[in-house]
Length: 203
Image (cartoon, rainbow, N blue to C red; front, side, top):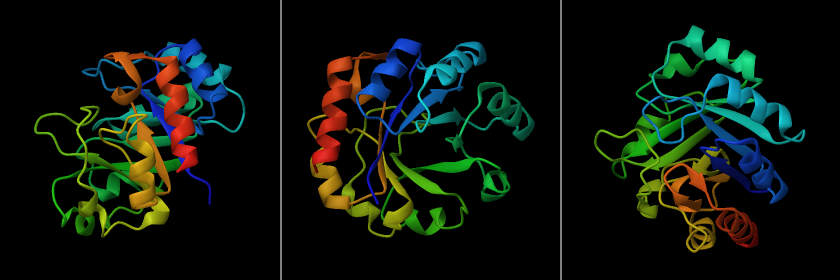
């Protein structure tokens, strides 16, 4: 299975198209109001409509009510929903789209709790108190030993310089990046996006 490369927190059609042209398999649209990468439903719909077929449109949600997520997913045309808050396993069940649960990895025992989630993918992100994600902090790779590689998406502190090493060490199903390819919070750097994708693919 080829590596899934997800570029998260895109805020403009231009950014999303560049990521897709550079080879991204998935783009993340952030609907968490406190994030510097948040987009409106209207902008997200424009981005989703502009993307070529085959690129996953992933909505990122933090503890949002199910009905509201379903409404946004339908309006935007999402292929997948990513739960990035404290959602219990039951909240991630029964969706018609692909499901991703972000797990804030705080130690080597985190994998045991993560196994309770019946989702398509588990996204391993660094645990930073008070922040659901997007911090740029790295996850110690030895803490990922208990995760099933076929549904593991590695995130947290990846950059164009570190992604190849991480992929070789972990062999995850996918990698996810937001801050690691930005020139400033919420602003993607096209050159970094291109290098990240190329280096991830070469690993």
